[in-house]
Length: 310
Figure 1 (spheres, rainbow, N blue to C red):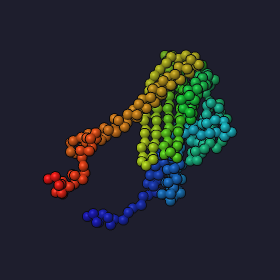
Figure 2: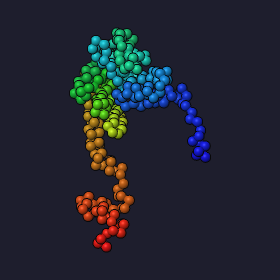
Figure 3: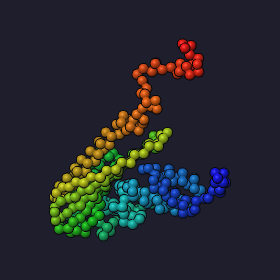
Figure 4: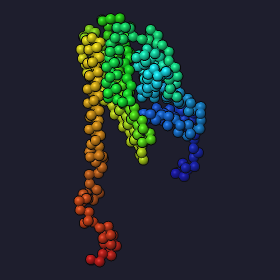
């Protein structure tokens, strides 16, 4: 029966199957490594049409989920590619400069920018709160993340002209540390939704943090840690709200990072030991403090009947 199965001809995957497999590998590439995966896929597939179609579908999703940031022309700053700043599939708003970046997803570059239309920007009332919060978050990010980029977008109620209307701002923080020559890459992504509730005069704050790390020197170890937070503060002036929100973000992110450091510093002593058998199959602990009592030669001679002391 086994011989009959071995004789069965191998069926080559269909076009759609190849595309889905390629797409899966691209979407699951660790932070900063999708281009390495893409290069290997091209070599394995040997089919440019399959690869190009998979890449056209996968790169935009990957770029937005990893919230990559791209330098805009003329050193105007960085634009974060995310679902919160997306205008069209290839256009992303940078609220800080009031510009729209046109992005080539596969090449991961910003090809050009254009001024944002009035319809794409928040009202002056909302901009007052957005601008104040952006300034405070920028200050925090510059201190906490050497290679971090941030943005504050309005995702609800951007046309409000004054008090009496709810609106929502989103703080995006993304940072990467890529060191492929040392076989390690890492990323930090955090999204904070701030719901400004006018009637109750409360700001409902929800945060989602995601930390990734990939070590691949003579092995393959990947960290993907996620954490959610919820907090609140009172509705105040734009400057006071900005300070309060930034302090909440700083508190939770610093606390979570400290908890991660403690948890992973204990990996060698706790977690890895828990993965191993408590006792060897002999049910006897090996006396590491006195290994001289064991002699491999003596044990072998004994087993072969060559022990002269017998």
